[in-house]
Length: 377
Image (cartoon, rainbow, N blue to C red):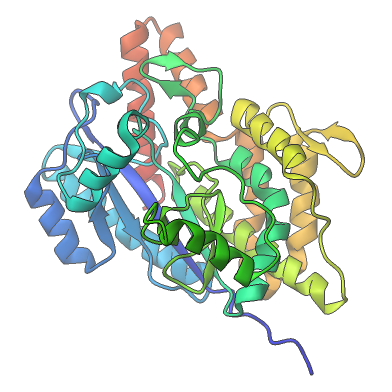
């Protein structure tokens, strides 16, 4: 009996920070802004943990073209409404100079409970991410593909890094967001699971003790979604540019199909120990694309530009079948230009060269992030 092909539908969620257009500092969202966006976007917009954060989510998309239309509409609406209040959204995982101690969480039952349960570690969570869902109906197949996809999470992270600064300092990392997020419980790379039953038993061990309400409180870098028949990639920093978001979504979708395609020939991607994949995760978090990742088969560190060419070739058949080849091939342009972390550092350095002081250069980075958000709309 032939193996049924999954739909490989996609959905994208993004979190944005709101900044004042004059000071370029974070600003809480006025209630009227929230109401107008919620009304215009009909269930695709919501507040986030902090009152300077908002979240959008696409509908289920059959292909990357549909995701492009959805994200353009969602980003454009948030930007247009925010402008009426002299605010602008930025899609970066950390604001370059904001102090988390000066921010306030959104007064909703869900977030009040989070603040109570997670105490000091969640109060520092002035971070934004993006999540990509890929539709896989069969539950055991979802777990099997997830186990194999873990290998590629560092590659995706390196491409997406957008959080080099924290509280006005260059952290030396490309994704400082993960440093904050990893302090929360039930985060990091997922364990290798034997199947859907194994996942359900693990979740039940915690829900039956009222430690968590459901699997939505499991915040792994990659997880079976708690709400949809999807696998949900959560490793990436949010991307300032829409085109980068689309490239990441297309890569995740194409990698998932590639791994499914291997199964048609009774093959699979080798599953490496989490200890080893974590080393690449750290390299991506620290260096982004500048120092390469470990090829465990070849037992060598391979420059990221070489890895990117290999990755594009690996999924070429799948990207063409899914009609997202242009978005996957755009990975070349991102690698050539540098990820957002590199571009933010370059913006800061250029501002200093022009004679701006540290604070002025930090504001220049935020201005750059505003421009990046609006560039593809």
